[in-house]
Amino acid sequence: MTAPISSAPEVHDFAAQGFPLIGGRLDYLNNREVAALVYRRNKHFVNVFVWPTAERGNGQLAMKEHRGYSLIDLEARGLHYCLVSDLNTAELAQLAKLIEQ
Image (cartoon, rainbow, N blue to C red):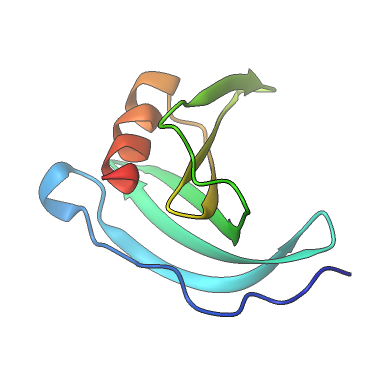
């Protein structure tokens, strides 16, 4: 098992931009302890998994679709963000850009 999250990630409510923060939890992803933030866009939920990384990030979004879900990977400020939702990739990318700022 990897080292636990040493500190909580910055958490922002993007309700004014159409992505209200619904909640958060501690979760496990690939045997890694991660923070999981939950946002909503209309009737869709977005899970944002966050964990520390050695990379500082370059603002590039890695997007893909799998079995009806959109996934976006983003590295910024020493954190890796993995956004997962049944939203289309364009709307999910809007949230990723807000998180990156």
